[in-house]
Length: 243
Image (cartoon, rainbow, N blue to C red):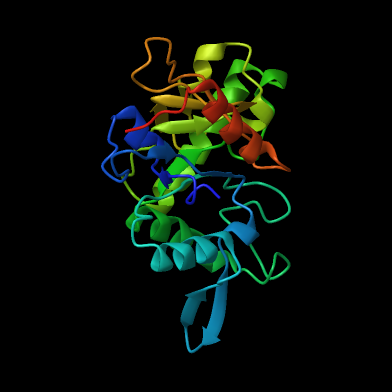
């Protein structure tokens, strides 16, 4: 539907940098964001002898198939991941009980995403509702997720953080800037994000809009007719961003 209506994908970092090179003139950018690192988003199929293939029924498999059939679908999506979540939300599964995904595949999946142009995004360690916790726990949750991403892709610069359930910490600034000290090693993990994603709120403003706030980027939830309704409203009010 988005393709037919003239939308082409970019990442959050491209929006922040006002890089619309993947969007042809006369068309509009759209950002796909996958939260929670569910196994169904990125699955491997073990073909034997150490050969792994991306499951064509998983989110990444469907994305790759669509892109292969639509050469002008050049951009990528954003994955806001957990690295210690329950029920398999641990870098897309951890163990055969979660859609057959093995723990050893976790880091390779994250690295594959980074190597293939997808954006990696912080979503806390285990999806903590940040308004319920102290400043110390908030910073630990965010920093330990960042550590997990770095373990999979050393040196990767994470620029985006997504609020679990859209809940802000009591100290709002800690959503994008803070630090945590590992009590076992004494290592200090500092974080500073350029963007913070809300859980809902509708289409976000253009980065050229003076009212655009990168620390509060609203989103359209892809449930029911939510996406269609948002697109219809943008067209009706003539507020759609067009390159």
